Structures are given as structure tokens and as C-alpha cells.
Image (cartoon, rainbow, N blue to C red; front, side, top):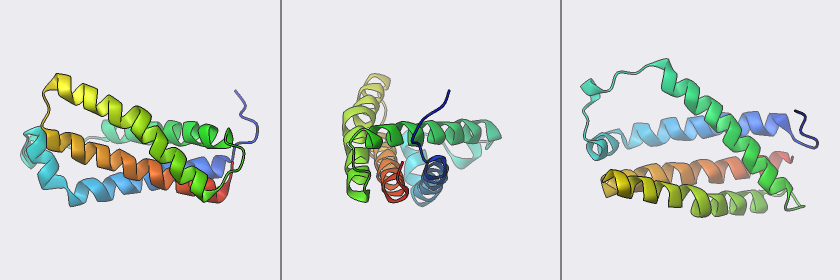
Length: 133
């Protein structure tokens, strides 16, 4: 499958920056996040699987966001950031709210995870808008 007019470097950089945002976010909020999921650090055994899934997901997310931004016509930082916010409000926040409500998840988990994805989509939109598609 060939994507015409796509800046692959922008997608790779946006995905890498998205991973970095996640690392920083959950490092800063580790205690609150663990309390919200009801686990301790000892119960969480790091393995490469979730990081591989996260990396692939970040690439897909950045590619899809680039497609959305590209359809606006002018690929700018402003359009990138606004598109990231719109995608978050329309798809991510709503999905998290529904899933967490049915799971009976702690509201703080929704706030922490939702804030993470908002930050990721804003920074990815900024990178894609700056690089162009």
C-alpha cells in the first residue's frame, strides 16, 4: 500500500515523540496511576510486549492523524494541533469515558489516561504540522 503525499519522517518523529510524552507522563504520574488502577509497583512486571504494541500504535496513530491533517488542505502547526484536539475529543475521550464507565474504573484513571492521549495527539499534530505531509 502506497500513501501518496505522506511525509514518512514526520510520522516516525511524531510516533517517537508520542512515546516520549507517554514515558514522561506516566513517570510523573506513576503513583497516581498505580493507585487509580489499584496495583503496586511490585505487581507490575515490565515486559517488552506492551512497549512493542505502544510503538506500533503510535505509528498508526501518527499516520492516521497525518491523513486527517492532510485532508484539511493547509498543513500547518495550528491545523495539526487543532486536529489533534478534535480527534481526541471526538474519538479518544469518548472511547475512554465509555470503556472506563462500563469497567467501573476509577475516575482518576480516565483523567490520567485521557490527559496522556490529549498530550500525545497535540504533540503529534504539532510535529506533523511543522514537517508537513
